[in-house]
Length: 106
Image (cartoon, rainbow, N blue to C red; front, top):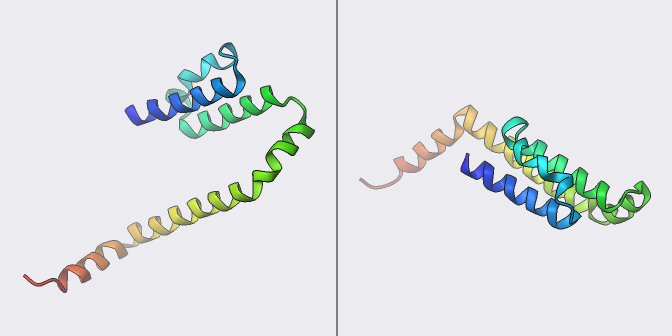
């Protein structure tokens, strides 16, 4: 819960700094308990982009240079999550650790 509050506070602080409008995002404090942290991040980003750059053309100009990097990072995170899930759920992690421990001297 403390980590969730910390991340929520960071997202809220980021939005407040980006928008310089406290009243527009004051309700975001309660979102981590209702929707979860991913929803908070998406809503905070959406609000910040919409308030800072109301025109869709300007939003595209500002965000397009970063699109390739974001796609690469998200792909890497999803792949790492899938890989660790496969390793944990299939029992491979336990088998590898048992094999490593078997080679250690007693």
